[in-house]
Image (cartoon, rainbow, N blue to C red; front, top):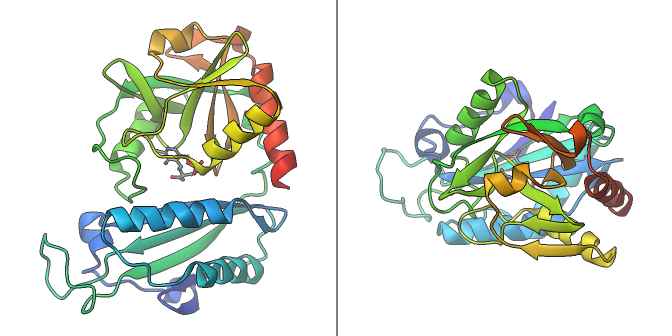
Length: 281
Ligand code: PDD
């Protein structure tokens, strides 16, 4: 695999980052995941805009322009022959000579940038989308700025492990009795034909897939309500689903052991997945 590191395209085993990199020492960095369908980047502009916002919130400068970033994405897709898959991008605050909590001077310590591809032949034809996934709910113990896409992914990793140990696929996070989002996706329920999802704030990541799906839903005359919902309301809903760049629209068929829609993917989730794939291709 060819990867990109600070200006160079290199075989992955030759790519190196300093042990002083603040991404490594302090999770001081941001990332994006962009999917590739039929060799095409999905929603690149949305991901680039969110990246710029994340960097701005952390007073970090981008080491490359948006145009250069697009060129790097395309070059990696071509060099690695990615037809179906994803591109991971990470920018960290670089590697100052000494460990210090305060941000280093950006003039002396430029940020680091890394990109790599992952081949995922089943990204569109995911068998899980036909069955739907099962989830548990867990306490949302993350920090308070989940709208910034940082690389502090330890709690989401722990959440996936809690789900795995419980014999299910994923977890939804709960704060003050209300669902915020999934460990690495946005969360939705459907009741009486209405799509309900938490509104955007510092509490959730503003999903690029979320924005696209809500736009497609409105175009298809589906009703959308952006508001908080509880776990009980979710368990009593007609259907549920999640969205992300790596799962697109994925039906949820069980929440904390309570089956939804007879344990089968619901019609709204199935239809939205179809529309999403059609419109993105
Ligand atoms: N995760 N919420 C969280 C906490 C996420 O980590 C993600 C994405 C989303 C969905 O955002 P988008 O639609 O822009 O992918 C929501 C990526 C896919 C990941 O960490 O792999």
